[in-house]
Image (cartoon, rainbow, N blue to C red; front, side, top):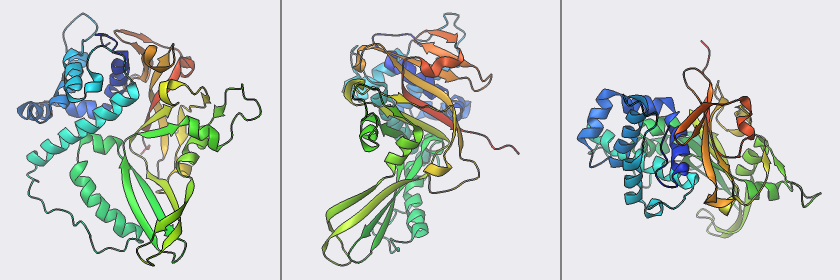
Length: 348
């Protein structure tokens, strides 16, 4: 377990789920990678302190049974003032921050290790057909490989595709972007699907289909300038998920202070084929971790993690320093807040 060092349950629960992403943990605990991180400590201080937590959890000879992540907490607070002191914070804000900084650090030392600093820069305005999906994607991947050439990029990065169509001249513009977390805005989702309208006091029920469907809805923009026809036009815009990563992190955002109450149908396994543009042989995902919130709305309650062990397949409850095996009703304990899915392995 991880010791609570002053209202840090939000951090402990988040870390336990991140620790459960095995390829990242294995990479950081690899002796050769650890030595290189240590040699470049000034560049990757946060990643190094996170690795020290992994060592404390998996490699320590201590019989205490828990590890105090104090040094990691100090570095996080130094890099981002909202995490300083002992005030309660939000697991959502922490995981977004951790993944961004750790990826940036690992990308820097990757470029040092592979002498890529002098690599030719990607053209700012390449001569490509902006309506040709393959050409746009290939150009996008050149820049992507420089910024996300890390174990975090390999495990956690998915792609969004957006399509803009001018209604005057039918000019099509395709763009790609990346994400490492999907955020389901449950308030917006419930309004979009008119859930719970028959009874204003009823707690709405929201399915995964609802959430993914809301992410890819089409929008109409009334006053958009088109570079081809040179006119202010009506344009159709649609953003879809092009591909999902090996490990998928989903935040169930209920609004500020967790105020929006709803039941979310959280599947232990699901097939993502209907939610993505790029069809692969394997689009099956299984749940391996949950950060759940208990008690008061907002940050005044308590965060606990539930994780499926990567070796024995058993679910455990991580309540700060207390770790126990848990029954199958972990989905009904507390308010599920952050979900961690892993792509199922293809049987050979």
